[in-house]
Amino acid sequence: MDDYVQANSELTPEQIAQFKSEQAHVGAPEAELCRGDALEMFEHLGRVDPVELRTGIDALVARPAAPTWGTCL
Image 1 (tube, rainbow, N blue to C red):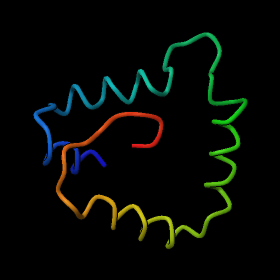
Image 2: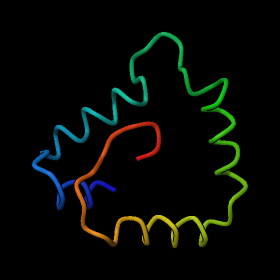
Image 3: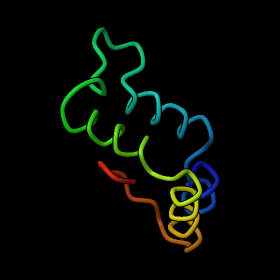
């Protein structure tokens, strides 16, 4: 994903790292990823075949386009 964002935007590796840190709530007193929809999403990803997941992600990032940030980059 980092390679895709770098190839299709002007973000630096440092800016990408900062964004991922913010999205992961690094340093937050209580992780938001441990409950609700986020937990359900990660549990689902744990049940997906790793090869299938990799193939899907590779297909998504194979097409050049400006990255958009949201709940489902």
